[in-house]
Each structure stands twice: as structure tokens, then as C-alpha cells.
Length: 160
Figure (cartoon, rainbow, N blue to C red):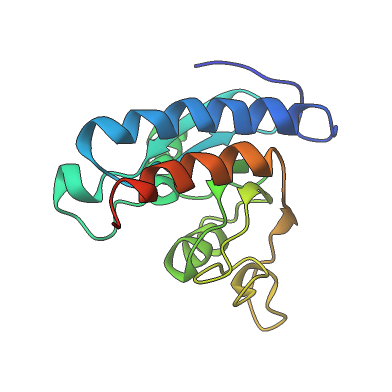
């Protein structure tokens, strides 16, 4: 797995999203929406990687975030990802935001906001709901233009 700067600094966020963008591009081969995610341990080591696999696997829950969380949990041997960060190219939906809370992810770093289905502040704010047993820090808009453009280019060829 790769390693980045510790999660407590602000410098690594653009690099984390860059890694997630690279993973997102892999989704294009299976005609999946290009969303990529990486889970980083507190020391900055990448411990989970995921891209959208709904079309490839025929699985409606195979969103990039869920795939990355499953990968990280397997790498650590536990479902508790306390102190870990998730970097993702698109704001998580309600299902993925719920998975972040349940996995005890400390921080989500996102590229593009999702004004239609985002659940980290756009439409809903699942990850910071005061009723939740765990709250996730949100850092948004990192390399937003690049993340948005990848999606715009994909949908320009799929929704004519």
C-alpha cells in the first residue's frame, strides 16, 4: 500500500484526492460512474482502495466508499476504522455516509459536492447528525474542478 503525510496536516488532502482520481478512472473500463475512494490509516498509509463496481459486479451497494471501507477493514482485521480518513472524488450518498459513521471513520475528504444526493452537507448531513453515535469531520471541495470534470465528461457520453 502507498503512504501519504499524516492525516493531521492539511497538505496531504490534494494528494489523497489525486490517488482517488486515479482509482476513479479505473471505473470507466466497466462503464461504472467514475468515483474513486481511498482509506488512509492515521499515519497516512493507504489501507483500502475502492472504485464504483455497481455495473461490474451487479451490486447496488458496490459504491467506491463501501468497497474501500471493506478493503480497509479486511487489511486491519476489524470493522472499527477509528482514526482513519476516507478520501473520495464525489460527496458520499446516504448509504455511504451511513457506512462512514458505522465504521467510525474520523474524517472524509471529498472532491466534488453532490447537490442531488450528497449526504455530507449538500442534501443531507448524515455524518454530522447530532443524534448519531459517531460524527465524521468533513473537508470538501478538494480538487473539486478535476473531480467534477471527470463526472461531467462521463455523463456527457451517457446521457444524450
